[in-house]
Amino acid sequence: MKKIVYSLFFLTIIISCKKKDNTVDNNTNVITPVISELSNPIFEFEYGNCYDYQDIGNNPLTVLSTNDLIVSSIEYDGNVDKLQISKLNTNGLITWQKNFTQGYKFMAGNSFETSTNNLIIIGTLINQSDWTKSKVFIAKLNILTGDTIWTKAYGHNYIDVGVCGFEDVNNNYWIVDFSQQNHKATLINISSNGDSLTSIINNETTPPTYEDALITSNKNVIMTGESGNTTSGKTPVYISSYSENGIKNFSSDITLTNYDEIKVNDICEMSDGNYCIAGECYNFSNTSIRYGFLLKVDNNGNKIWEKILTQFNGSSIYSCIEKQSNVLYLGVGGSGNAKLYKYDLSSLTAINTNYATSFNDIQLVLRNSKLYRALIDIKTSSYETVKIKAYTVN
Image 1 (tube, rainbow, N blue to C red):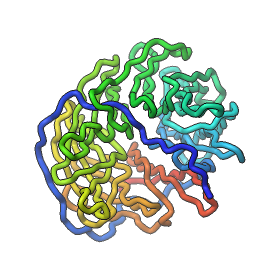
Image 2 (image 1 turned 90 degrees about the horizontal axis):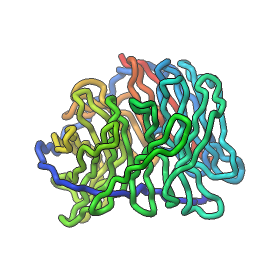
Image 3 (image 1 turned 45 degrees about the vertical axis):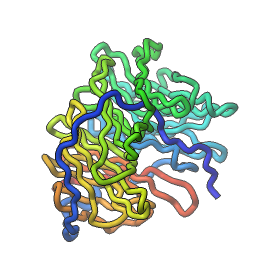
Image 4 (image 1 turned 120 degrees about the vertical axis):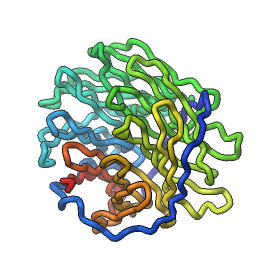
């Protein structure tokens, strides 16, 4: 039986201002027939061998400027989960692979490329003697060879989870830290040699549960999850934004119109500069009926529209990416039964659904007419791998 070491529900910090709801659309259209607008997979490979799937982050895939890929996965060493970083060429073949084995249990976060052609790896170091003292793990690697330049560990000593980050205009690095035990989201600012510079805590009146973060094209940090402000009897969606220099732009609670409870799974940036948050929703009166939701929010924290996928029960959305204006690709369906759909804000179209049901889409990336799917493959041997599948978009 698989042991569950931690149950990480990223908790943090809630809303300073409420925003006005706009368009509501409880979508009831039927699903259109399966179409083939994607090529057969260019490649599909598996990475890692994880003992506890919760140690795999929401965004294990990074597409580099060269179109090579970085996959952050977990490799079980017979005792604990270790962080495994793989660099892949455009054919999905490994050019180098590195395991971090300092005697700790790891969790995998995202990574980013630096202006000096290096790679910043983000994750979590679980302290073996006292798991509450876990820290954000940061490593700088040579992007060509995978050689380690330096490693650092930062945080509040309260189950700090490293999520994602970016390089600012001063060539310093910002790292997003979701701390579970003290309900904080922190932006950690470090220099290019790894020295600590400052940190910014996202303080809110009532702490939310943080689920995901996004670094936008203009280097804003967007954090989202479930709001802690439940005075209305409903759980709102939480979203907050910070600019590249660590200045807070906004934070908002947004309640879905006809649903009591929500679970946020993903957020993506849209071509018009706004954001789309994806997850699932239900009512307390009937928790067995659960639908996927999409919530579009502008760059001031206002709701633009909400869409509910009422086409079938269990339409939870685990990943989303914009294909073109008002057209999204969605990873829909949970419990190891994920499928890929196209959604034009009214019709839900099934795409390439003829694959095994042991997968869950956790990340979609669209780059240069290629769609990359990062999935957790739930193995019968009780281990999980990160599966990467690449397609050409027709």
